[in-house]
Length: 464
Image 1 (tube, rainbow, N blue to C red):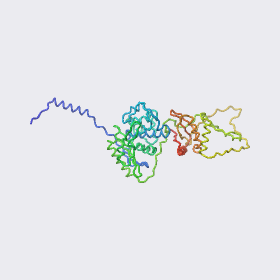
Image 2: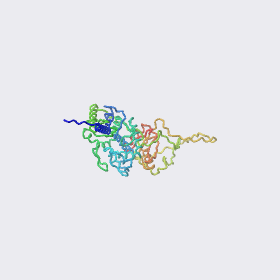
Image 3: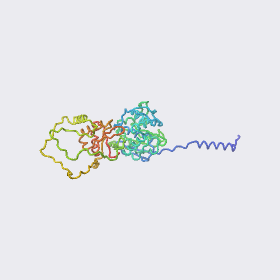
């Protein structure tokens, strides 16, 4: 048998080729850090955690916050499901996963919500943010404010879709908390996350989480996410036998291994959670839900419109008059609002006039005619005593409509709104009808009473 010897020239050529091939092969990608969290959704009790407070890339789990704010904006009257959104160049240019929106295209908000929640479409998420806040950057700031108000202390958002960006970070704990808030705060929209497919206006889209929904008994959400920097992420919720468990995984190696790990964690959660436990719903975030900056204190810079001196009792021949806060409100409409409010609260309004007293009321004067008049003092509404809260009862197309609703509501809720200040706040999107100068307790009570009568209401805290 002959043995062929490799000459130095051929050996050098083979070695050079081998080195070139090795150089061209990319090094294996580093796996994203693994983190996990499991809670009993009913009580919020932590059942398992691993690396849960490490700030990592959330990927499309971000869209849970995007959708939370959209649902919040619908509740507050900032936008409606049937609002027609014009797609910007920025939204249309987002990389996949996407719905395929085109610049200038018009589409209803409801279809963008479906595409973002089911298909995890990046272009739809960006379009939602721009429709709510005017720009994606402004929307991301509102996302971060909402996260902080929820207690998501280690989360910062830079966009509405979750693609990797510097500083766009969250934790397994924070995303688990967000999933619980979505479930309790917006149950009317939660079913979106369990749909295997849905009509997104342009086409039917399929759920990125449909494999897990089909494989795990009781699973009904919530959101998947993947980028190279994040790995395979998932926040999953499932209900069995009256128990509800939420599990979160960051840094999965693949869809299959991630789903298997989440199933394992949900099983662990069901085994550790008690059969019966008191449900403790999370508090909704207490902040200015519209995202508008309204200052950190409530101050009224206008002159005092009401004298602090006692008002003389009306005589028998006096005609009662109604004092209004703005000249924009027409007198006939005020009378109509008064009539409607009285009708809601009592069936008959007795005509009772005060008895005229046979005494003279002398109003004391603080200055004599001989002295120079003292300079007028303009006071401001005090925010002491905890009366730094307010409520918002909707946004209206003009000041007249907002004033009318404020007056009608004040007359109908005299008990809870006593001492409050009616104020219309103009913004680029309309006129907000607000009551200011309430305590936190009275604001909460007023909102609950109004909501029980199907009147939209949310609280305004002392800072935005």
